[in-house]
Length: 178
Image (tube, rainbow, N blue to C red; front, side, top):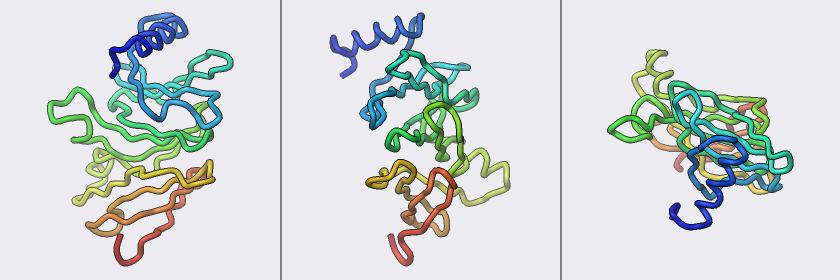
């Protein structure tokens, strides 16, 4: 996977579009539901950031510009939002360990950036002794603006939440046990 002729062809085409040598990682969540945009991870500011390519105009737009974290994973929510998490690829312990984490949302044009859950680094800076996490589980069927996520926001066990990406409102779906 990743060394076949199709992937090499995609890489060559992306090099043409971006007019330079690019590094890309094929993922199952690359295109928006309406297939008018392609999300990809691209080196920006020395870190892996999220870029959206408008498939009609062939114009790329960087929608994140982190210089201290890499975007580790992302998911389309319909065609309206991208939800992503952060980490650091250049650590010996792995991308998902350390000060990253968090859960974030942004529109494909880079607008309406929203922090849904803070990174570990932010929690440490705020004096937290217990680190709370929230991770993407799935999109909400039929919705362009809601996701289902799991996290230990209220106890040491994970609960399941519905999250509105427009408002950031988190609705607890599990009350006594996940």
